[in-house]
Amino acid sequence: MKKIAIMGCLAVALLLVLNFSGSAQVERQYAAHVPFDFTVGDKLLKAGDYTLAPAAGITNQRSLILRDSSTGRGIFVGQASIGPELSEEQGKLTFVKNGDEWALGAIDTPRYAVKIKKLRTDRGELQLAKKRTISLQN
Image 1 (cartoon, rainbow, N blue to C red):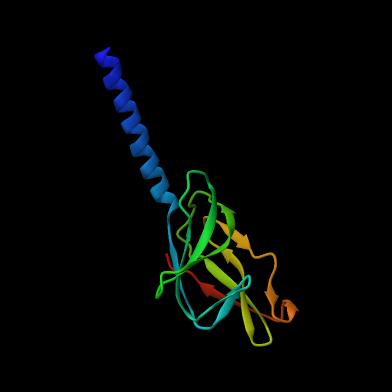
Image 2 (cartoon, rainbow, N blue to C red):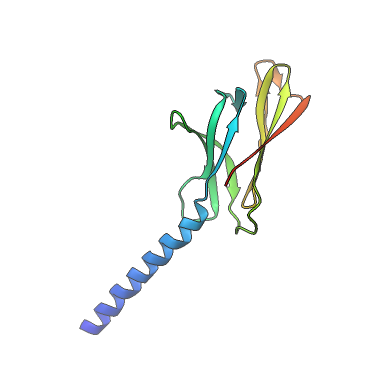
């Protein structure tokens, strides 16, 4: 009986260790400097340094959080399937502009990609007039 209890404890400890090491690989963050004010959905974000990372979770379906490095505040930018890391390539943020307003339009990294479906401004639907891409740093 004692041997079974010890084996059970070892099995639980092994599962915990494997769970932590597996999720550490998924938590990779990207950083970018955005030199202009922009919107994500209906939220206005100021120019500055940002980090992008999937929210904590136990599945590969994760919410993506864009966090302002100066304030620590984060905003939900979409949901993505987190895939295996296939390369060391940098990701990119794609912004679209209509008039004077920039909006986040897409996120593309080696691990996940998200297209922002509804781009809105105070004047209604955002029409693609210009596009600008900013590289993400690993």
